[in-house]
Length: 120
Image (cartoon, rainbow, N blue to C red):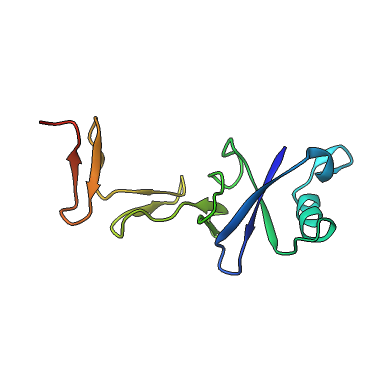
């Protein structure tokens, strides 16, 4: 199975669908273009479709509804969890402004600190 994400004009992922490998093969090779054509025209869904992968082997992260496709990075980026977090261009994931300590911590945006959830 191959997976394709439908994106809107702003790159927002609207949905992700699985497609049988046999529907996207061209001369025995899996083709993203064939998958795009299959979903948009043959199935009749229209839209813009981009391939995504559970193994993160294409476009850095597996797409999910609410993710955004960043064309410059050719990556699916998850929603930003907090305003202060910074996008890592290598992983296309958001990172806190301070590294998370070992253990169970949650980010406090107001104090810009990690708060221990298991400390007493």
